[in-house]
Amino acid sequence: MKFMVIVKANKDTEAGVMPSTELLAAMGKFNEEMVKAGVMQAGEGLHPTNKGARVKYAGGQSTVSHGPFSPTGDLVCGFWLIDTRSLDEAIDWMKRAPFGGGSEIEIRQVFAAEDFGEALTPELREQGERLRAQAGKK
Image (cartoon, rainbow, N blue to C red; front, side, top):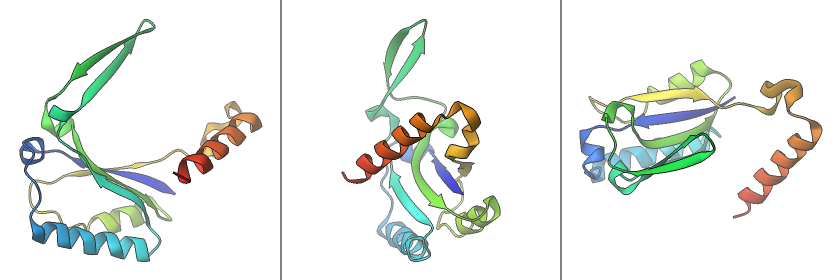
């Protein structure tokens, strides 16, 4: 089961405050443990929203808004993509993440092809597999 682990932003991450060397080292150790266990597939930190944009769609039109955005509790400052046997295993891993007080994460299961049922035709399934393979080569 794949899960997206969403790291919530806070006032420091939105202000562009970089993590300490100690936190970077602890995070590197944690990430290395997940990689060695075959759990971590990807993980990155994100720049603050003042360097980002949002695109909203309505009535066939798109509207672009540039950051910063608020409230910070609803914003994302980083993520992991992990593969575990269950939500409980994902939770167990994330309970070990080296965050201090005031940090919050959200764990969400990623859809698998079989979750879409008959709507995902064999042609669409093949297209998705082909695109994932092509994207993985870059």
